[in-house]
Length: 434
Ligand code: TRP
Image (cartoon, rainbow, N blue to C red; front, side, top):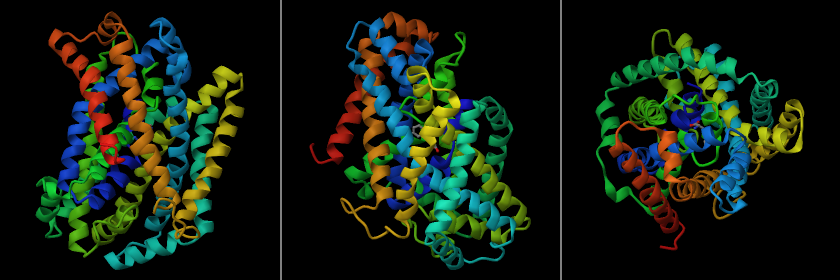
């Protein structure tokens, strides 16, 4: 449940639709689904397994397991790189979490009532162009996250996930139902599900793969931490499959809700990060009970973002606690401060620094590319090699404890050969080496 809470977040409802739009739809979706199934699930099993065996912050888990496998302590780099990636991701995740907070307010005060696509775009632009507002909402979201992390009361929030996730799911269905009334539902479905490979560049493939890692929270040690709480008897394989299935379903439903609205209102599928904030208000602005449903929707999206944000910074906080003997409060304070300051770069990417480009991209785009498309896949390759080649087969067989011998062999082939090779090829191809 907790890992599902960490997996389902802004990545599914905000990021997946806008990346799909930017990369031309269906072919991107197909690559994404293949990556989730063939790479995501075995990698998630590997991470849960390593976490359950190591039972510490990722850096120390790797230290323990490297010693056990009699390999170099250099493998700790997986933990360090992942811990850093988590903070980098949270710095921008928090800005978008702030957007969600603001949109709860807009919705509750009736701002969306009767709004057109154009009106929603104008509202969003006005909102992001105000740097002070961006910092304010980012700060509010960071405080919410660090409050939970500092108190170490994740379990309370995770229990809430049990009820709130199904509720979010229900509201997504309401949105999809609305989408069927726009007259553009089929056009939306075609865009999502009729593969058009002419749209598929190397960068699109890398982005689809990176998004699979991002959405499942893989490649940085979050899942290792959750794995360390998984009881011995639990089946790692079925847990991983069910997390991946719910995560993907939520993303696809979000896409099915959003693209019909995009086409019906003459909006731009390539709008980028603003996409859901320009489309979802239109839907709630036109349905009966939209005020209530809309407010509830952004509220639940906030909770989904919240449970994910906690998991992004937990590796850094537990590292300070375990290795530098800090109290949880102090550790949370320091990690939170650094991440919060870094978030200014993203908050300003949409206003003051919108024209500042490095490699042709804004600060936010660079940060996103670096983390999702480079750091997570790189961490993934190393985790796959560690779990597939260095951990003894006896260990992985016992830990995974898959009933059918065929299932274990499949996992082993995927983690030893398919995952490292496929991820490397896509990575090298996109950065122009292959
Ligand atoms: N998966 C989350 C989402 O889709 C974000 C997230 C949480 C994440 N923990 C992570 C992404 C670890 C990468 C790595 O919103």
